[in-house]
Image (cartoon, rainbow over all chains, first blue to last red; front, side):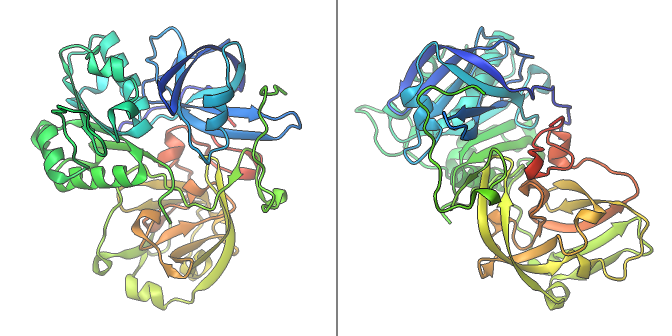
Length: 249
Length: 200
């Protein structure tokens, strides 16, 4: 596996919210102006810290949705109904507000053009966020590495970055496919299937082509996808993944 | 301190604040964070070995491991991704037991695991009743997704030091960073000093 030192982005700083974009009914993108930004690599995250008037603080990690080359650092946050930080970020935050964060963080789940491909990106739900940063970076640096995103969502309304993804704003070397597991619009010609071995076999390059795979989503999805890929013969060291959420224990 | 306009927070009244390190929140769930796919090593192929700077390497099979004296401990665990879980109950073998009779001048250990994961710890942090190789959680065999059949349990450090799917310890004269430590996490990882990342 690639090993790299992490750039230091450890100091807490206050960013200004410059724009909020509704991505889905539960998901918002927050564009931030930051006093100091050492630059990030696609796939990294930041830690966000909220402080109440009495000094109580809460921290969470959020993936960076923007490419390193984009004008602003963008976080895309899904509102978790029983969450403490995400409902504030999605419901309360306004343009002009300040948001405390530090980063970029994480040196494992990153892609840059020198790592090559072919690049297979598997996302479920808000797991698409760091993969969108990868796709934007891929486009901006005009990478010729073939890339494919397979994105699982419940319904079309839950697809984050829907316009960008369906317009294929990422160029000809990028192939984007959706699977809508719960509700399909009329005339839907995409997939409806969950993560099964046949589907993965259909969308991925054969193991001999050594695709570099990034998997991000809720734990059961990530477990199932990585297990299937390795069973299909892909190298464990080329299947990178980040899982989030409870396990249902 | 920068106040977040309109942020109330949701403090838990049932959690003793003195048991929650800075920046952590208490959860009843048991979230999972892994760097690699969940390995499924058959128990017949499993062993736990101690190697490196030792007078002679030792290894025990799964059955030999289960036959060692075990302890049941109730501890709080703190994950670097911000969740803490209080009063978790584990059954396992103390590292004092596993290291009993091993002669070494080493001051560091590198725990190694199925799937290639490693993590580094000072030897003094895994001896003296501070660390276990756990194989039961909440009275049940440890699930593979939580590190089963057996994981390291070092509750006084961030939970990535409690390596899942652990297969042994390499005793080392010199410290060597493990997996997450190489990718920017803190080398030691004391949750009470909030040592999350390299440089904290």
